[in-house]
Length: 215
Ligand code: E4P
Image (cartoon, rainbow, N blue to C red; front, side, top):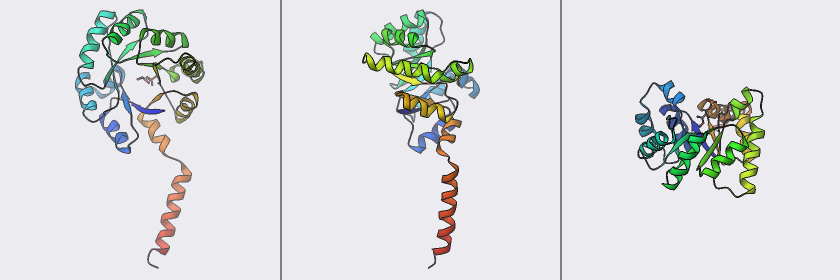
C-alpha cells in the first residue's frame, strides 16, 4: 500500500517527504482554506518537490465546468490528478477526462455502488471516505473491503485511495483490506512512527552506551 499525505500544509508535506515514505498528496478546498492560500500556488509549490500523484479538486457543479477546471489544474504539473465529486455530472466529466488522458480521483465515495460507477466512467483513483462513514455510524473499513474485493474480482484498473482516515488503526485496516493507497493526515503519520517501547528501548541503549563508551 502506497502512503499519501492528506494536507495542503507544505511544511508538513516536506517533513514527511524527508522521512522517505511519501508517495503522493491529496488536497481539497477545506485543507487549502486552512492554509489560507491561493489553490493554484499551493499545488504548484507541492509539485515542485513531490513527484508522485498530487490531487487538486475541481469545484464546478456541472460537467463542462469540471472538465475546464481539470484541464487547467492538470496543466500545473504532469503528476496532478483532478478530484471530481461522485455525482452524475462528475461521472460525465470523468469519462471525457479519461479520454483525454487526464488523471482523475473520484472523491466523496461512500458506497461500493458509487465505486463501481467511478470505475466504469474511467476514474484513475476512487476515494472512499472511511472516517465520515464511521461518523454517521457506518463501518468505513467494511465498505472499503467491499470496494477492494469487487475491483479485484473484475480486475478493475481504478486504484482505491482509502481516505478520511482518523487514526493509525484506520491505516492498518486499509492495508489489511488491500487498499492501493492510504491518504493519511499529518498527525496520524506522527502517531504511526511512535511506540512507547521504542522510546524506552532507545533510552536504555543510550544509557548503557554511556557506561561503556570509554572502556
Ligand atoms: C481525501 O482525499 C480527502 O481530502 C479527505 O481524506 C477528507 O477527510 P476528512 O473527512 O477528514 O475531511
